[in-house]
Length: 443
Image (cartoon, rainbow, N blue to C red; front, side, top):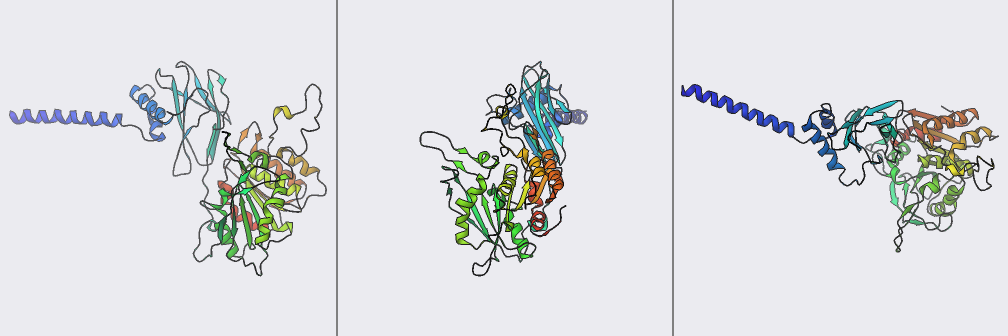
């Protein structure tokens, strides 16, 4: 009798312990977006909703206003190159909240009880992107700088990895450069790469300029590794590379904050930036190193606005640059609406809307330029690049490639499914450099 009763007591106690353990497992705080996505599949479960709410509120506790929809989304990357995206918004608890993205995609957000907060988590594969806006009761909220994301994963080529037995060049950080002529008041960081094969006594080196320089001389797959490998293998000539950051106006004692001069330098489609290099920065390089004076021995490379800037430099100063490498180039319309001719008077102001104002004009200029300019151009872009008020960036790169083909330029346009980043460009940098120096045929 005692044995039977004791066994029953133990059995009940075991069930109790299991219930406690189960409850604890259920209430365990989610650690990532993948776990949150599972909880959101049961939207009527109040305990799950509370966990989701706590998860997002903890991560957005410093955000002052979550009703505007301009705050950053959450991202969790996965091993397959894709990842999870998480959205969080505050609105009236009874509102209908939907996330709209290009290509007719939409994701209804889930109300977290009567808290006034809404959440959504979606998984995206590699080579996918979303440029999104929130909709509250049918009204689209304005897009902000963070209303886009994407996933892309490219394999590095052997030339982008350190190889045994390959001598390494020197990367020298130069003293901060202060412009006094073309961009007076700006200060910029810059670096010079000197290959191991360079010897001042008997070598005349080629020249490569990288805009947004720091992003190309540090980190995985950086250009110094690529140059080491390609120069050692004699796939490209001995080249000195100069990595130049955009200028900034330093903060002032009167409280004025630091401001960037990047758009003024890169998106203003005049000869100014190239002339700045020629007259202010390159003389310092020419003094110290033997650099070829031939423009066909000079490459300028960059991504985004740095890519269109590279083309601008060569377009206006073919006496300085005749080789261009552009990754996800910003060949878009950067005009403000007030820069357009007046709809009432239909008059173009003399100081506005000029032919060099925006890189969006280049395809037309390329077609009309006769004879073609002596420029060789490498373009790269992905079909998940930006699509915003400045234009469809991938289509604008296609327009560039079509214009170059029509006019008989030596060019190569590499396409992919990537987003607006330099990842794909860096992955194909070895191919770009070999082609830009050696090939005589367009691809």
